[in-house]
Image (cartoon, rainbow, N blue to C red; front, side, top):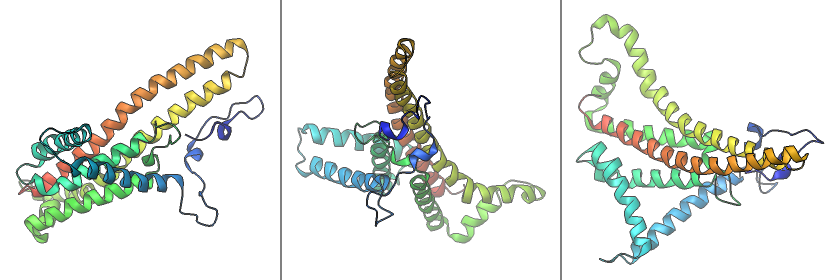
Amino acid sequence: MRALSALSAKGDEFVPPSSVDFVLPPIFENISFITKPILLVIFSALVIGLVFAISARKAAVVPSKMQFAGELVYGFVRKDLGQEIIGHEFKRFMPYLFSLFTFILLNNFFGIIPFIQFPSFSRISFAYVLGIIAFGVFHYVGIRKQGIVKYVKDIMFMPGVPKPVYILLTPIEIATFLVVRPLTLALRLFANMFAGHLLLMIFFLGGEHLLQGAIAMKAVGIFAFGMGIALTFFEFLVQCLQAYIFTLLTALYIAGGLADEH
């Protein structure tokens, strides 16, 4: 979350947060591409790699707390997002699905971690990159499984449909597979992180502003802070859910690519 001064009152007028407050300036003046979101994404990758390397380094029959936590997360992704969705070929996709889930989850958590308070995926470019990667994997799997000719043919000409319907259906299917699916996959993650963080800023910064007013306004400010705290717990649930949904849909798309018909 931006510093309170960035959204402080302008005289006695409260300046509400907006999309402008998600565009953070470069950390170093001479290096424009190094911003807080970029560093958070890099930091998250390093943390995930380090934590799971440590948890697996001294694996034992009776696991340590770190090993138990790592196995718990991996077991969840393996069973619920890999085996049950993709089927018997799930093992070769586990490194990708596990990395995807933990990467999204940690970057979402940054939105409520004190002194960080900025969800990386509230910047849409990061969500777009994950969407593009997911569909690169999906199409690669489908082409490798069926061959490019059959794969493209099945997308363009759905089996069992009357030929005149293809005039309308084929453009829709092409747009769905190449544009709509990756776009909605990315936008769903971005929109939830953006809206949730914006809502938290409104309550906390609005509450801070109201506490500077009259006694009646101070009471409203305390209420706003309380709502902000309650919404923080709700945002935590949303962050977990969005990591799960993104990974789940990716697994479903991969399973579709492996199917004989899709």
